[in-house]
Length: 195
Image (cartoon, rainbow, N blue to C red; front, side):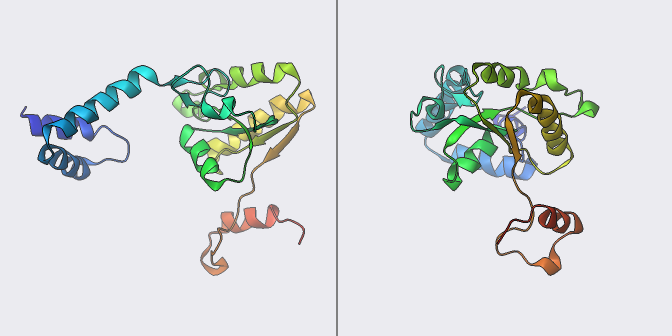
């Protein structure tokens, strides 16, 4: 296999990268100076060898604890449970949450062989042993896997006397009711708030 085909094949293994995009990326890379490829490969190797899971929240970190868990300004009595690291990053970009997080690294999916043992639920339960956590915010996606995981966690955690909340779902800001699907409209009505 020639080097361009090999590079394209490897790039196509990335999520959301099809063969055409992989070829475009490969062509872009080979047009760059040699130091570009060296820097890219070095960055990839450093990321793979140095990034690990935070010992507390399971977010990605290059040390034992991530920057969020090390931040003394965070409200450590509140934990927002998310499916994956990109969900955590999206919430952080909103600048609307100042508590801590817990990353599950997936959702329950019996069809795919993913049960509670495959997720970072055991680590979440260990965090709750100290008694300093008062609220768990379940911020899983509003789909079958996310809803099933949120339901499982709420049933598991409620007996501990914690306040369990779920992020609201419904109409997007600037959305149009006329063009909104029935399930989203139903959720918007269920999640309504006082005005």
